[in-house]
Image 1 (cartoon, rainbow, N blue to C red):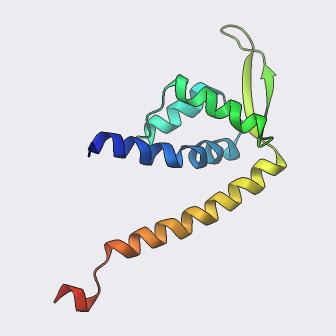
Image 2 (cartoon, rainbow, N blue to C red; image 1 turned 60 degrees about the horizontal axis):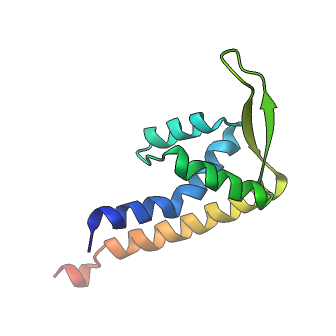
Amino acid sequence: MNLENTKAQMRKGVLELCVLSIIEEKEAYPSDIIGRLKQAELIVVEGTLYPLLSRLKNADLLTYTWKESKTGPPRKYYHLTDAGAEFLESLKGTWKNLTKAVNHSFKKTKAQAK
């Protein structure tokens, strides 16, 4: 098996949750989202992010507004819809259950340790 491929698949699996969580904090411009993901070591390129944003928008989980920029053309800023906020809360619950299950699988019981 290829370790790097497995790691990439794991990151992709949580990308939607992370992107929605970033946008939940405040409306976000795609380069801001990429910056946050890079800080979290979930490195994403525009070619990955833009299709994801488009899918989320088409699913009515996101919407956007255009804002004038001081340094160029207007920018598209994304924010959650009500449906997106509900979807995110459900994802967060699923994430909590998943991380609890994964963390539990890492722990050895006293009987196993002997």
